[in-house]
Length: 149
Image (cartoon, rainbow, N blue to C red):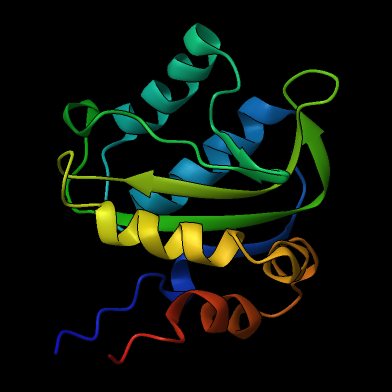
């Protein structure tokens, strides 16, 4: 049984102030850079993708999942999580307060991470817990709980 932690404590930042969506995405990406998961080019690609494709990274009410392609600089797969102290908008009606940065090595490797993220955000109370989290452990518990099968 592989008991892999989906999210590590050092990948979480709480009560973050971001001046706009671009700043928020950059903060989220920089965590992945600091953890050695991606090269700085990956963070730029995350932002370029949103400029090109629009706010396609909104995956649930108030939750955005910035990412780019593996060839944009992924070293190792992983996720980062940022909770802003107040919502930021891509445009009116497209606000978010939580960012889950995704680094995937290829199109298959991150399926288990995405399943876990989907499991967490599919529960209405989990989204509220994420948005209002004040402790790293609250978030770690949401993501890393049911790992034993």
